[in-house]
Image 1: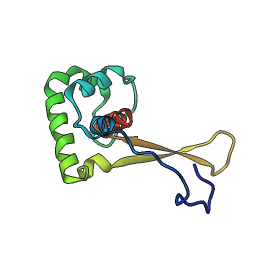
Image 2: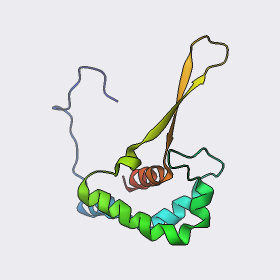
Image 3: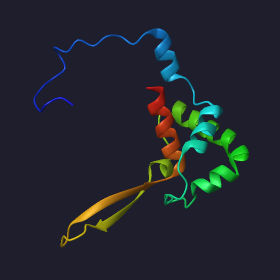
Length: 122
C-alpha cells in the first residue's frame, strides 16, 4: 500500500503478458466452481439467502452450470445482481469493552465463490 500523498506517476509498471491477461480475463469455468465448493469449510453462517455451503455441496451437480451462467451474465453486464452485492452486517460486542463492537459481514456464498475465483485468476 502506498503512503498517503504518493501518486503512481513515477511508478514503473510492467505490462501483463498477453497469455496471462487472457487467463485472468477468461470466463469462470465450472471446474473452478466445483473445486472451490469442495475446498470451502462447512459450518459457516450463510448470507442473506440463508443457503449454507452444505446446500451447495449436496446440490452441486444441479447448481454449478447455473452458477457459471450467472457469473458469465454478470461479467457481460459489468455488475453483479443486487442479491450478490448484499451483506448482512452483524455487530458483535468485544470482550471487556463497553460499547465496543466488531463488525461481521455475512455474504451470500455465490459472491464468496466468485470472489475467490477472481482472486485466483489474478
